[in-house]
Amino acid sequence: MNDHHVMQDMIRQEPVLAILRRQQGFRFCSREERLQQFREKAEELRTLAEDVILEETRHMLLRLAETYQRMARSMEPAASC
Image (cartoon, helix red, strand yellow):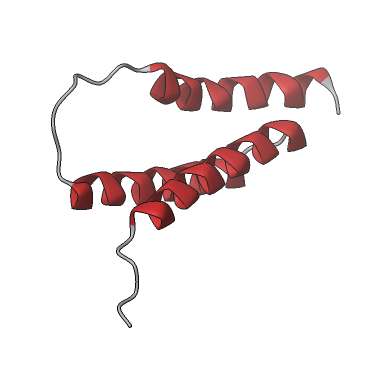
């Protein structure tokens, strides 16, 4: 991989890193809202990973997406018997 591709990837990463660093004001939200936020964040990270050139960065974003997806699954109501 040449320096040009690395630089392009770093430029693409910056918005992702800014999102991850951004501190949101604390507010109470319902379980359903939090579940939806986790699902949306997982999808956002998967979408961002599609445009990343560096494999290591892409894998990092996909691992983060999977973590958000697991958090969402853990909050889903248990199936009734």
